[in-house]
Length: 390
Image (cartoon, rainbow, N blue to C red; front, side, top):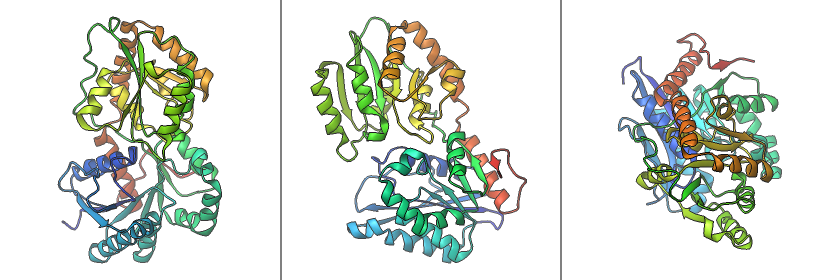
């Protein structure tokens, strides 16, 4: 690499295909950064041997995967610890950009930054949100007291993906610079819905995310049972996490709505694209999101979106491309009823407004914002507009 090259080391606990948004957004960010001039990108992670994972599209991203057959080694992150330390000794990256908190792998990235005097950027990715802090709260309070608060204070800067996340980080007392940079989406395979005669076929409300209690599926299924769903089907897609899918299925059976609800399972690639294109509405009834990349994806496919105020998507109302509702069953019932009684042409018009709006979530722009933060931290550029000092 040339002497002027900005050398960035990204670290993330895993890139498993079933890990939700971060495995995709981190690899897409690494890809977008590597396509910039004079930026070299390393991406270090860990994985079980032979397990499937999401890889960056850009071949110039140097991907290091610490593979192991030992569950103990994976949980302790020792393989990744060695990989990060080896890179720091050999190449001394300009910046370490760590994604996530709480896990040993996150701690080892911070430790290497301290050891080698490398500026550290921490990207919590929603893990400091109130709901996330409260989930398994005793363990997290203990971790915060023992090591996590010190680790976060080590960061030269923090990246939040929304204004809400920025405010929640500040509320926890962290005073270092915080950049507000959203996640992006890939537009290259998005061409919008192609379904004909939207008012003359079975219509689809789509949920696509992890099957996890934070996503609000119990509320969604309960709301669905209260609606007139004639001519509609609710499709629930995504990887089951911790057996929550069984709980959701049991509720569907109890409410006797199996005929109008389909559990699709995990989808990727062309199957995922086809599912978006087959839908008429998208719903994410979440309790907490720092961003919610599936909302942006759904908008890019021309789908009106219903989500809750647990996600930072007030723009759905501002740009008239969806509904931003309170958390709970009754608000979901009201929004779904309104959305499902619109004509197909009305929903299509909303979808087109959403497609126009979501063009701002372009990975190239996001990569430039991120690099400007790096360069400011290194004293090579003026403070970017996305960075807040107070």
